[in-house]
Image (cartoon, rainbow, N blue to C red; front, side):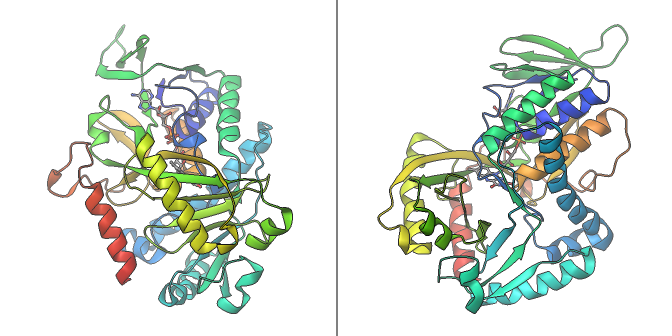
Length: 403
Ligand SMILES: Cc1cc2nc3c(=O)[nH]c(=O)nc-3n(C[C@H](O)[C@H](O)[C@H](O)COP(=O)(O)OP(=O)(O)OC[C@H]3O[C@@H](n4cnc5c(N)ncnc54)[C@H](O)[C@@H]3O)c2cc1C
């Protein structure tokens, strides 16, 4: 089995495949965790990117119930893996807080919480504006919604631990092995794939792709279905304990209700980590520098208390969005894949890797994301080069303004 990409998806799949008796070689173009898996905000979140009403109208109640259950199970999946493999990554069930940027966003929380309680038997807590100080030291929001089930972790340590766990299970990981071409080739009567990498050729009976926002020309059919979008993070200097507690009294994973959203949290050493889609383009030196400035201004809008605080780090990474903003998994032209996490990938990528590993090993397990339509670009106007990102960025800003 050849697994392409050594992030949460690929490593989780390789670990599961080896536990189920398969041989797995993980081929990674750069180094372990080099992609989004080591660079993200470490928010282990329940739910999907799309709202529940949209999901129900698109997929029906029964499948949406299974999707939501999968999103809850994905948090348990990460927790169990961290425990079983003894991964020292600051995993903590601290809950997440979604904050409303407009009154109508807050009004919608009550409706969403009611649907989630009724349809998925999962309770969210609504916090009105006058009680918000118990959750966040900012006065710009109209209220919030809390989900106690979500968690936080240190992603770089988690992905390193996941790689150790995959190796312990028997996986081989090849770094600096960029997959360049994948072609069908039978060997000794067995159907399979000839995988050409920058370090040599591998033959594998099955191939699984977990390349997320870095999906490239080696898998052209998948590339056309994925939009790579940049996301950026700054972290401040270490804050005095009292200030850190004032900003986030319950140490939540926080994100706001905009399309062009900000997400933020305290790190265990009390820095403010503040992220967003400051520039839509995937990371370059220039986009990282500009994003650092934009995010700092955004952080001060939320927390004027940080006006004089130094920003010590800035970095960027690439997310993967499908055209329908959904996770997708299954087989395309005979090759297995799991992609489309839309910024919700820490838990879901780990879970999808595990489920796809089980599926490839022949176990019939529940996966509501397999078999849903996987649309490409409207009118097929996309070859994998996202020329429309500036327009998409402007469109989302416009939507935030009017909605
Ligand atoms: C800045 C940022 C913040 C984020 N914050 C959060 C968050 O707080 N919570 C959350 O849930 N999600 C978050 N995400 C999203 C989350 O990080 C991703 O969804 C998740 O890491 C995807 O994991 P993956 O293994 O599928 O892909 P990745 O970790 O991106 O790994 C893909 C790997 O494939 C390799 N690759 C690509 N092409 C080839 C090839 N041809 N040959 C060999 N290897 C190849 C790449 O080098 C890369 O290492 C964030 C993402 C970013 C960028």
